[in-house]
Length: 391
Ligand code: ATP
Ligand code: MG
Image 1 (spheres, protein in one colour):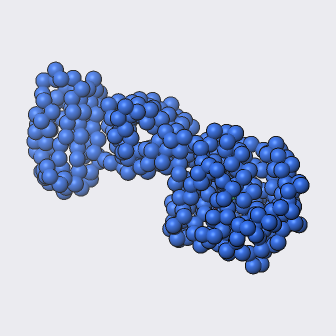
Image 2: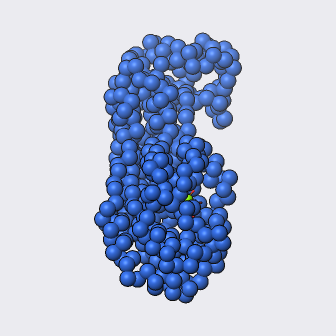
Image 3: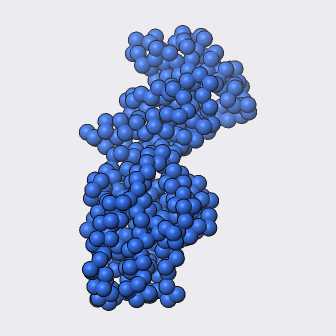
């Protein structure tokens, strides 16, 4: 029945002179989301985006893909009517209503737009006449102009268009309108959600994963690649940097007090991530940290981790309860993958009693013992990193 979609956007409508940048980004993201589903034609039009669908396209699949494109507020499936002649047009709109609403016992309001101001009827006249036609054909229907349960929109241009259904989009801003940031992506529940949330504000995402072979397996790494792929359904392609962290981790394990291991390790992760970010034009780091979740996420520990960073660190989950994070993970379909039981590079070397109130003075002192070798190790880790583009 539906041959097109009308896409309405939210906040991006209010961006003044930069509006075209937002509209272009939205159009490009929609094209990217639909590229494997057929030859859709995506065009910008005053304040909205219009998608014409190829023959035989899959409606459900298309709506699902559009519901993952940030910046979309509403998705309206559109029926195209090949005439603007009044009589056949009213009949076609009636047929649409008949097919779409089995039960006609609802209130409605007609809305109309003309593309050509020379059309023999004005928009209010179209509404009145079309409304009268529908009331006559379907006596159960009732008009309610203030609080209708269905708004029936008719647009007359070189063809006619009718739509009445509104499917909610994800909201947010189109990816590509707000710079790029580097997500520290582990195999856990939190970091994929953090990446999703920041990306929803229009930020392009790259990612970095630290692994420690042979202490962490190929399957643990594959799990992170899989998570990146799931997140990329929302964010678009993600460049994933995979850094071998084994040597650094063993070195810390050997030379530093075990209860400080996690904190020192996390400081080195941040340092390395920051170097990758600077090399690749990322304007900030993103983590899945949340206050109090584990010993390394107390305010003291977060301060100790944060001390090494110069770039801003975005922590969208900082005040979220675990269950709220899980709910989002389920919604975006990363949860099932996140809970697969593969070892994480942080958990393997974890101390029985990690510090929860690390003192910076003590940490600095412990890190002194790494001085001779750590810079070379960091350089090697950066130089030998593997890069996978996940799409
Ligand atoms: P997650 O569910 O995201 O793994 P977590 O509760 O396990 O979080 P931590 O292990 O303390 O928390 O990690 C905190 C954050 O540090 C993660 O959300 C992630 O952003 C980053 N991080 C931790 N381990 C790694 C890793 N191996 N590679 C990349 N980033 C990591
Ligand atoms: Mg983790």
